[in-house]
Image 1 (cartoon, rainbow, N blue to C red):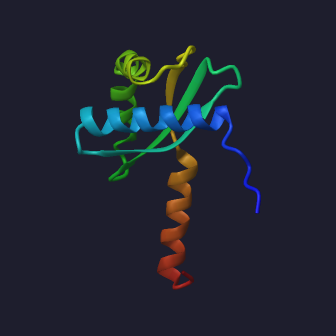
Image 2: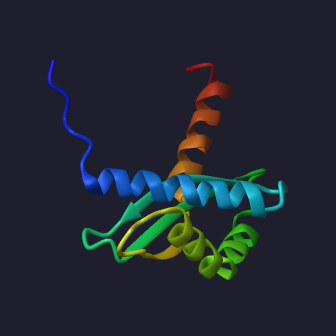
Length: 114
């Protein structure tokens, strides 16, 4: 069986995801726990958007403020830990889709459907 090759875009996305997740693990307070749920990167590699959620629910705004304040440090870590020619500007957003999915799962669990 022939597998689709892991293309450059996927490798860059994976590398940046790993570095950003490592930064969050090393630098963020454990309350709330910040989870990186998705990273999107533009085709020209100049902009990346990191989607996050938090546990417990409700800490998203504080987490977003922290990450935006630390954005230049995160970008410097990506520069230092990778050999990318273009290091994207990194922006952050709350992953409401993931939060809604979790809420639907909770409702279904309460109804006994999962």
